[in-house]
Structure formats: C-alpha cells, structure tokens
Image (cartoon, rainbow, N blue to C red; front, side, top):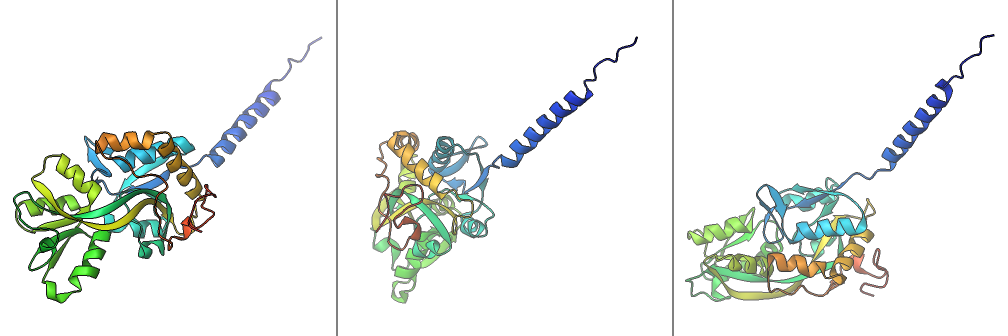
Length: 286
C-alpha cells in the first residue's frame, strides 16, 4: 500500500506569504530620511571638507536625528534658495545659521532657538574704519544675498540716500570676504559667530565693530509642520544641550565660545513659540 508523502507546499507557501507580508508591512511603515537643506559654504555652520559635510549645524542636526531616532540626508543649496525650497516642501528641514525674522516666520515655522547672534562689520586688518565709517560715506559693503544682514543694511543704510553706500550681494559671505581682501569692497557684514571663526583661521581681517541686534537662530520646517517633526526637533535640541553635547560640538569648531542657553530669547511674532510649544509644552512666550 502506497502512502502519500506529506505535502510541504501548503505550509511553505503560507510561511513565504507571511514573510512577504511582514516585509511589505515593514517597508510601508519605514520612514524615508528627512531632507535637510543646508548652505555648505557657510563656516562654521556648514561647509565641505575632503568631500564631507562638516560644521556646527551638520553635527548638531546629526546628533538630534540620532537622539530622536530618525534618519536624515543633507542637501546643499545656495542660501537664497533654501527658504523658498522649504516653503514649497522640497526639503523637510532647514539647518544652517538661520536668523529668525518676522518676514521668514510668515513663510516657514521655527524650532525653539538654539543660538543668539549679533552682526559685526568686518574690515581689512590694516583698515582704520570704525563701525560707523565702515558702512557710510562712499563705502562698498558686502553681504550675503537673502540674508538678515542684507535686510538690515537696506532698511537702515541703503534707504538713507545721504549715506552714499554701495551694497554688493554675494552667494556666500566667504566670497565677500575674499573680495574685500583684494579691494573690491571695503567691508563685510556677517554674524559674529562666522566672523570669529574666520578670524580664528588667521585671515587678515578684523572687527570694526558690532551691530547689536540680538537675533535668535533656529531650525525651520515648512509652514504648519506638514511632516509633524517640529516636536522631535525641539526635544532633540534641548536634549543635546542638556547633555553637554551641544557645547562639545561648538567647541570643536569655535574653541572658547560658550554656547548661549537653550532655549533662548524668541520674538513674540514667532507663532510656534507660543505656549504650548510642540514637544515642550511648558516652554514659550505666553
């Protein structure tokens, strides 16, 4: 009497289907990396060295992603393109030395502030200009196009026709400093963090003076946070600050500079910093 050999086809098919289903389920729920827009010609915040992205914003954003358990990929773009790209949801996060302004707050949403800066006027090392003469009376001043420094110059200097100042806009403040070194412009306005990094690097420049604007810097997401990541960013920023990792990152790029307390000052016009703040409900302007 012949006995039929038990068929394994049914169980194997079921197991295979189960594995495939599990794989599809995992893939369906896998989070694609968030695209983080940067300007990689803006040291010490972001730049390229030996083919790799480096800088305070690069290391901090990587630490925040690790802390909060999500993946990121950096996308280098010219600074004037970053905010429009974020507003159009072509990138998910903007991480650079981004100053918080009322105009920007209308187009994008900000995280809690992670830095506070003032602007400085840079001049050649042998210049006798001070903070006032460097931006008036026939001066040629360089700024980064689309920056808060450009907005400040236009509002406070250029619109005053009596001052006779020529404003030159650059894709990068590094290029502006290079042009100043060969005499094409007489001064450059940039944030004090970037200025100090350049001076520490031994460039033949100096600060003619400081423009006290007390401007907060922050990460940013598209308006109304369509990806739902603002809470993670806020929690991550505070976590790396409280652990001391934030100061370690700052020390590695601009030694001797103490990172401002987090969270810091944020203007009332920033809607995302009204209580409750995403991810940190006890914070915010009331």
